[in-house]
Length: 137
Image 1 (tube, rainbow, N blue to C red):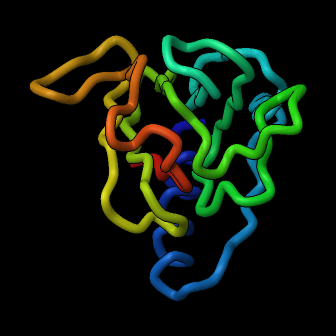
Image 2 (cartoon, one colour):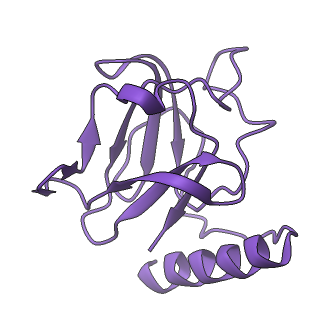
């Protein structure tokens, strides 16, 4: 599972640099987009304080266009107001623009905090309703 996440991240970076997209399958045990918060996932909520509809993702996503919060007609792109990383090993960056384009918020592994970075953000400040992609590293 860890090697797959690294491979997905590496392919996503290459695709972003080339301006294309790469489709990568995730393991069958990964249940992205099922609305259940599971270990190893990045979760975005529509509202601050981890409330409202959510979207759970196991792999990196280069463009939130076409994604929706689970059991909702609300699009994910530029709508998230709180986030959390439920992977205990890997950090990620969630970006203001599609295709992993700056600026970004660093999100540490589950349960960690250092300086201004954390594993969860109940409010996104200036990034509220602005996130468009995320990349594991």
